[in-house]
Amino acid sequence: MSGSIIEIRVRGLRTLNDVKLPLRGLTVLIGENGSGKSSLLEACEVLRLAMDYPFVDKFNKVHGGLPALLRVGATELMIGVTCQKADRGPIYYYDLILVPNPNSSAGFEIREQLLVENGDVPATAVFSRVGRIAQVKSQKQPELTKLDSMDERATLIAAWGRSFGEPWAKDVVDILSAIDVHVPFDIHPKWTTSETASGSPRASNIVQPTPALLRGAGNLANAYYSLRNRRDWPETLDYVRLGLGAHILDVTTQPDPAGGIIALLVEDDRYKTRFPATALSDGTVAFLAYVALFRLNNRMAMIAFDEPETHLHPELLLRVVGMFETLGRETTVLISTHSDRVLDGLTNPSESVVLTDLDESGSTKLIRPNAQTLERWLEGYRYRGLGDIRADGHVRSVLTRRS
Image (cartoon, rainbow, N blue to C red):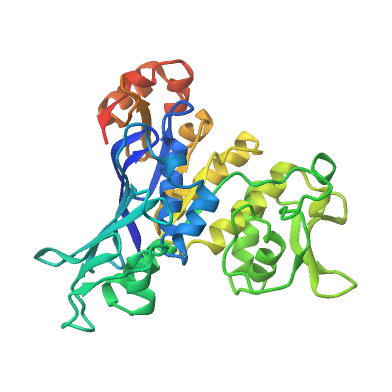
């Protein structure tokens, strides 16, 4: 395992004025549009991006720069994380702070802090950075206490962990690099998309090693090529059949006659033929992508997914919820949803669900279900689940506990 994400802290990001989200197993975000669900997922992606070089260039290109994220009236954007490399190992507290600064080439200044809590020893600062200067405590070079003239485009955590090989910083880089944020798979049939569109899960792939399903599932054929070459392939095929039916005989990859390219095919006993991915329904392709995500990406420190209900029939969606709950036993899982069916399929909604709600100032508040109240509603009114309660408009009677 790369490690685990224990808590996310965000301040000054759109509606996220000041929130702390403890994470354990599967966490399911619900709430109205614009209440901060997707912003929490984007904060996770910014943390992952901060482990790359050059962070500033990528941040400006992908996220639109600091003005696109900074809350109106906020003086800084802070994204913090509590994480751990292994059970009983050190606990790391890392804060990334971006402060508007017209004198900086990026238009903002990077500030960072890393604290380590090791056993009974109180949290100790490993480094504290403001702009181009940092105070540091090096394990490899004890005489080194200060860094200056730092690269404005990069985070210190990435340089300290990768280039200098500082053990504690390297642990944090390994963990945050293994944050895996996904959006709904773009699996529309080719005839409904632009002629120049590429990267679809239905597309053929140039054969190459595939350790994980990529965002968008554009490497789905390669993902199944890799899964078929693992010893546990029969178990993966069982997951496919569990959702799509026992009539699915196999999922294969077929080489293109020109060589170097493979296509994904599904063998269906009902029709005595193999169907290419281009001929499969949206829901079938989506479910195949979820199985690949579940089987390949389970070593990540966090898997986050926005609106997993897209393209899926309710029964298939329940299978996916079950996979996310299973993943939650191994790693941190964070999903955002508008689906009542997702809520109804949760084994323990009082522990999993978090409502993002806006207060009078437009700031996000995180609220969890009251377990006793939820149980009374389910028993007294014979609701199917929390989603059924929400569909009837009573969710605020159940979600009363601040996260």
